[in-house]
Amino acid sequence: MTPRPIPISDPTLGDHRRYPGCRLFLTCALCGWSKSYRPQRIIDRLHELKSGGYPTPVAQIARRVGWNCPGCGRVKWRADFAWPPNLDAREIRRLANLYRN
Image (cartoon, rainbow, N blue to C red; front, side):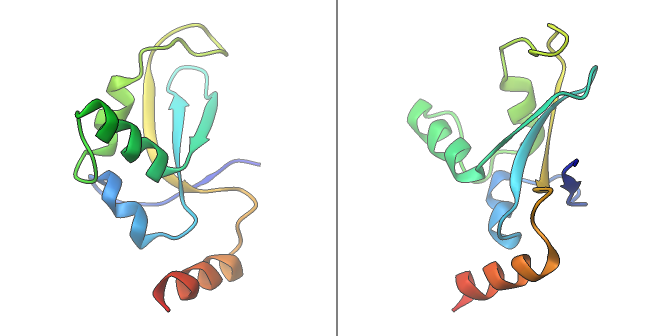
């Protein structure tokens, strides 16, 4: 199953709080190989490196990746917020209520 992208124009890492349960999917633009990350983990790492945080654009994350794709061996990444394949609408509402209350 494939992740369901969240349609946001020019998202920043801090936008993940509006979409409970979302993941940051790093995808190879050439072969389609992808890996998901918790957005907070990326933010914490950027804080450690003193090179970004919540206002960092998601597109900049893809440009910072320096490792080659395990699928095709090339380096052309894109990053997007997406819902994991196993997360349904009911679970999204449950998480939103959990974080809100």
